Length: 470
Image (cartoon, rainbow, N blue to C red; front, side):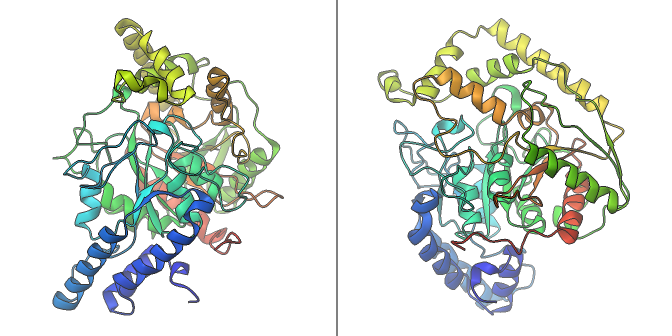
């Protein structure tokens, strides 16, 4: 190896358990890179050096005193946390200049990661309350993809993806309510998994309106992402709908998927926007690769009815109203946030119930329409990575939101259905930009799409690609 960050997260964990490297040494390596490079890509809103070194030293003591037997695969590995989730006694900004809270207990998913010995080097950058699909907050530099620093790392897990793509962490925590793991993973050339509804929920708060949001992993390779999902996944005691498990997700990444039936479509389900030719090429290349691997691949009709966007927008604007903003600070919010909250105030209980019922019906129809397929292949985004500032429009937030929908019309529908989805980064365009595609699975069948993505990685590996700043 030439540098520690060239190792995968699982390789780093194995090196810690064998004594070839200490967690403290690894953590110091990533802290140095983060302090030097974070602002260039807008990765962190806060670096938690003291906490990280304390955690790493505790890992090293445990390895020295008790040996490596029984330790989790990612024990001692660095894993930052998105700044929409709580780390005990660490300030959280939620991407907003009007929010700054410190609580004494971890969010449930953070507690799970802490218990498995992961090391928190910081809180990653996110847009205000995670609402847009770009990360350009007031409280940190814009998140940028290391593949082209003029282009956005997406959102709302933009800082998380930027950190991994720039080699500031091997794995990272993300969350996804409308594409917020898959969008940043697509534009930064990473694997991002949105698990099934209830698999890695947003406790300790109750599920928000619509049950759209979930936690999930972002990593450079499928096995690392699967191993982190094993850490994040809830048990039956923690979630009302955790779903069945068939072994570990890491095991799924290490086995062949068998011969599968795969459907794919290319028309946008949320808008009538057309996809960029580079996206169509990536979709076709992936379909051809799957056929070459022995899978049955067939093009299908879009399984969603038209005009879902107004009902999704009703839900999204209602969610914007759940942010705890003091009335006297409302004017300090970003224009898009104010716009969404103004619309949210107009949503009656009857309108919210009707929109959610419509979305649930559409979800059930889509699930039934594709249940004969083991997986469905779709684009992640409609266009190549957007430039920083391209989607943001402070003077016209309505256009801002509309442009986001046209840029990302393929992700949010699978938050509505609750199905698992994984971004596969096997395609790059002529400009050297990553063009992601999604594999969508049946409900609670993450193992299938993880195995399938790992098979694509084995035959069309992207791990030899690194940005210049790597």
